Image (cartoon, rainbow, N blue to C red; front, side, top):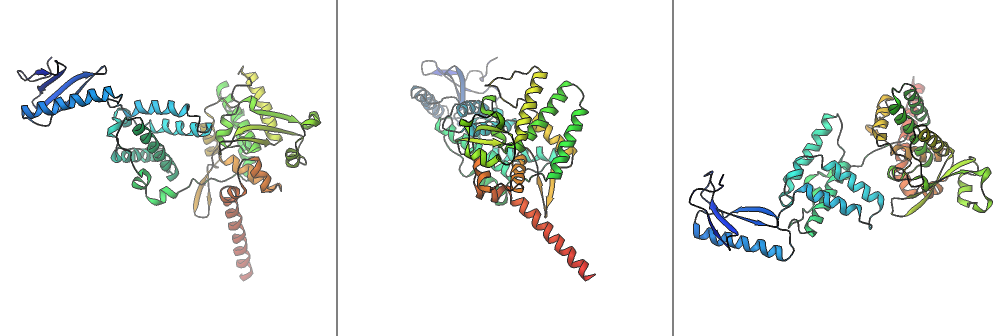
Length: 422
């Protein structure tokens, strides 16, 4: 069926440019249509004057072929087409740390859950389109009875901004989207941090006890496997204090399980001895890439040793391959399993002062630091072991602990004053 109004079609540019008026008669403007780089493309002249239209459309045709001759993208790609190419670029970008590459790709996969981004042309992505995405994110959170954190929104916008900048460099679009976060997020969201806290010793024991009960009551081998692996994962994380992304990327060749009674004297390590010399016979040495894009040698406690030992037995029982180059934690449902466990034990959130802070896998690092400080380990040793600084420990990891202790002290003082008065 012809796409043009009868008696309006004519051809120019060696018959490669078709000029016509549309058959649907929605407008009397003249249109141009051509075939280039394996794809048909069409545009409007925005005028019903035939002579003016011919000049406009022939110039459009010439620009297309100039772009082709200069190696410039002729057809506008969609957001998702560019996104897939961008993620492949990130995977191969060796200037970034593995943890950084993993974080960007994970965040972008979340962004692509927003379906309107799939078909929109990359050159049509503007502030309004991204504002609609933020509204959608908020609606999704409300459906799940969650509060969307400013840090999450800020991270999404930073990722989109980097992606748009890359698209400009690739000549997929002309303009960057400047200052996305300041234009689309109010100040309190931009500065908001995700607040997490540790588990007290009592809470930690309660969590482990509930986990054991869930393992006993598991229905089916798959559920039992998931819950047993989660249990050992929690113990390993509290035993090492590793970051979540560090542990998720660890392979068996990245860890050593040490029994001091069988240790070669030539392998003696002064820092290891000072760290665990008075504590335990068993420990682990874990080689990971830290947050600063450098290798770090982490020492895990005896709990981490026995956690790995039980994981090996678990994998053997379920015929899971354990080789030097295979990942230690293979189960991708650990996050969901942990959230379910935290909700079942009422440990997902806790109130400190007037604010509710949450717990997730990152809380195990907080807990490790809290336990080490409680055991009298110097913060300088803790910082060295976890590839961080004493300032970071004071600022982010022990801040909630200090707040809790202050609240407890003030509460006790108030109670004693009330009793004295009464």
